[in-house]
View 1: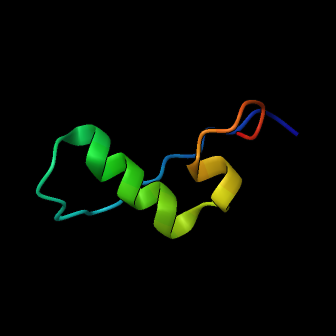
View 2: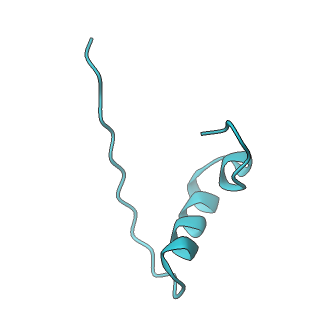
Length: 42
């Protein structure tokens, strides 16, 4: 079995900057601890 590359594309209409859009997606799709940016969770 070889290595894999996984790419996700998410559409966001967040009116903020790129960080706000990324945070919105994280809160919608990832576990709370990952979205909060806790160390060693991703």
